[in-house]
Amino acid sequence: MKYAFDGDFQASSWLKMMRGGLEYVMDAYGHEHVGHPDDGELVFHLVDAHRPRPFRRQSKAVFVVGITEVPPVEGSPLNHAYPLLLRSLSNLLIYGGPDPEPWVYLVTPELGCYPAEPTRDRDQWFHTIYDRIAPLATSRLVIDNIFDEDLPPELAEGTTVTEQMRHASRTLAAWNLFPTPYPLSEMLSPADYRHLQYVFSIGGISYGNLSARHDRHRFWMSASGVDKGKIGTVSRDILLVKGYDAEANAMRLSVSPGSSPLRVSVDAVEHWGIYEAHPEIGAMIHIHAWVDGIPQTSVNYPCGTVVRV
Image (cartoon, rainbow, N blue to C red):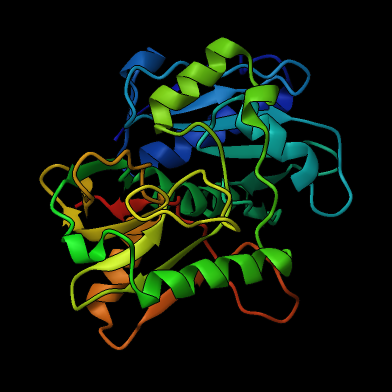
C-alpha cells in the first residue's frame, strides 16, 4: 500500500514524533512512502483542531487518517473529537497530544473511540497504533448499489416480515436506541458537503439499521440515511437485497419497476455475509447503544466494508 503525509508535521515536537513513528511502522510492514498525497492510497492528513479542513481525495478508495494535536483530556474525548473527524472527512482520526507522555485515541465514524495505551517502548506503541489502522485501511468500501426492477408484484406492498420491521423500528425509536443523526449539512461548508456526497455517496449519517430474512439468499433491509424509527415504503426505505456482486463491488437489489429507491444501508454487505454463513439467523438489529457489561469488539471495522484480498 502506498502512503503519504499531508500537512506540516514539523509544526510541533509531537507531530514530528508521530510522523517519524508512523513512517517507521509503515515501512516495517512493507508499505511504500510516496512524496505527493495525491499518489497515496492511505494519507495521514494533519487536522487543525481550531480550523479543520478536509483532504480532497482524488478517489473514493483513498483512506484518510486525520491527525490532530490537542491538550490533555479527561475521560473519553468523543464529543470533541467526533466533529473534527466529520469536518475533516477522515476515515479515522488520531486524536492526541504530548503531555505528560504521548497519548492518542483513535476515533471512527461508527462512534468508536479507542485509546492506544502509552508504553515505555515507543516502537511497540506505534505497532499498537498500526494494528488499529491496518484492518480499516486495507478493507474495501461497498457503497454502490445495482437496482434491478424485478421485484415480484406480490412483494410490492411488502410482506408480514416488512410489517414486523416497521413495528420494530418504531419500538426501538421509542426506546431511544437510534441516536440522532449528525446534521452534516450544518457542520460542513457547501463545498465540503458536496465532497462528502461524492466520496461516500451519502448525504447524512443515520445510526442503526434493521434487516430480516426473506428466503435463503435474500433479505429485507432498511435504507441509508432515513429515520430508522419511521421506515415504511417498500422499494424506497425498505429494500430487498439479493446479494453482493464482487466484480462490481456493489450490493444488488430487487425493486419495483418505476420506483425511486434510496441506497440500502451501508452495512448491507455485513448482513449479507452473516445471512449467507448462518442460515439459522432470521433477522438482525443494529443499534448504537453502548451498555455497561455488554461485550464489544476490540476493533471498529468501517461500516460497509469487505477485506481486500
